[in-house]
Image 1 (cartoon, rainbow, N blue to C red):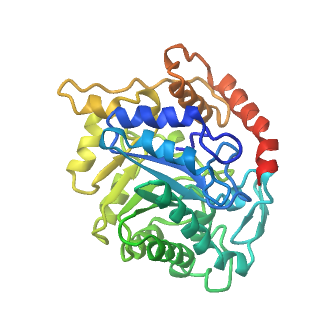
Image 2 (cartoon, rainbow, N blue to C red; image 1 turned 120 degrees about the horizontal axis):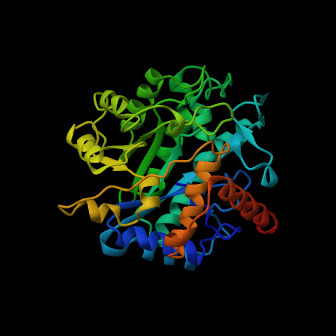
Length: 367
């Protein structure tokens, strides 16, 4: 999850530290900090953390400590927004130049692409130095590495474009470089899309090939998700479905790799989580909105009486309003004021966007 609780200059806030403390004491085995940027020139939002030479290591260590209580783990999700970078902070750039359907970006040069493995490795080395037990390389949801995997956005004719093996090459190069630099002790996960939900995008068969290729590398976990924040993509949460979104894909993925698999998306009840793991298709389940509703949910599910969160229903929310509502709900959790959080999607979206706008000057001054 992109909690968007950074300070606007790439460092953790007290609120963010408290949030991950709540999840660690609430029974979560692992918290993954969404959208931690490896290059401040291409952020998803100005509330992202950045792992780089200007990072406040003391505050990062405090975040690690809070997220590691009661035996929990906390990892940063290493990201690069590429063509989806936040325009007030960036000149978005992806694998290929595009100007259509609400998405406009430049093409990264070959030199810039070849520099990516060191960017990710440098961020992973810093994560290891401040005490994180692992990192997740983000190759899903329409951000840079997902763009490389998709034929819709990757139209390159060099070794990084063409068939799926070539489109996966930069991801493989990054994983190899990170493992080389951090050694065997730091866990490495990779998040991949099962589908982009875009016509002409990554197919399920191609995604299975990606899983197989990554599974052949020295990774410890493959996190299966799907969907894209690219304009025009249908959000997974807006699609009619019941239960985990990508369990059938995970079942296929299990046949091509022995690497532990994590399933993220659409898991709302203990029964669904238990059935997914019990099926043998996956080893770990990932929760996002459920943990925004109840930070103590894992501990609750471990007790015989259990109990599932009650998901809100919104009538005709604006585009992006539901995601903004959950994001602002995280801010309420961080301040222990979820009991009085009464915002609707419209108000949450306005608060979310105004909060980001207020951070632009600090980001640009820092980076």
